[in-house]
Amino acid sequence: MSDSAAAAEAQRIIETEFPPERPARHFPTSFRDDSSVPAFGTTPPVRQEDHRTVPAWAAGIAVASIGVGAGVTGIGCGAWLVLQGLASVSLNSVLMVTLPFAGLAMAATAISSAISRARSTVTKTIYQAPVTQKTEIHSHSTTRGMFFARTRNNIHH
Image (cartoon, rainbow, N blue to C red; front, top):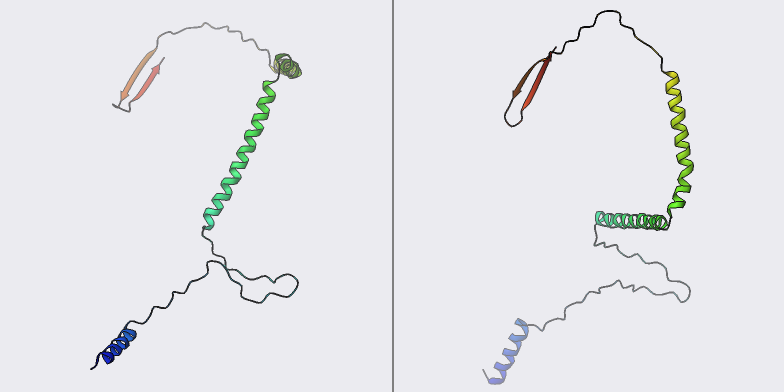
């Protein structure tokens, strides 16, 4: 075989065994709409697939935490406003505001005391028999247990 025939055979073997690489196909990272655009007016809507990366429970927790945060912020602002208002109040103004309530409370106490005394019955018990007073007390105590002890006291007159 001549040198030119050997070179041609070697070139054929290389091309059949090792074909040239085809370029890799690249996929678009965004949606491409290849449909024709109308000449005038708005473009019709195109369906786009929904690929969510966040689970539904995680989105729910995120929304709930935003709501709780907003609620706590509102409560904090309200407390701040109330405390700012109380900080600017003087003792005389507090006494003037609470004076009618104190008067009503005193009147209610007096009326309820008068009603309870009027409802109570007056009884005097007169004892005619001799009275014997015993001052002796007999007691018996029993304790059981070591760590969780229980004591029982029996008192007899």
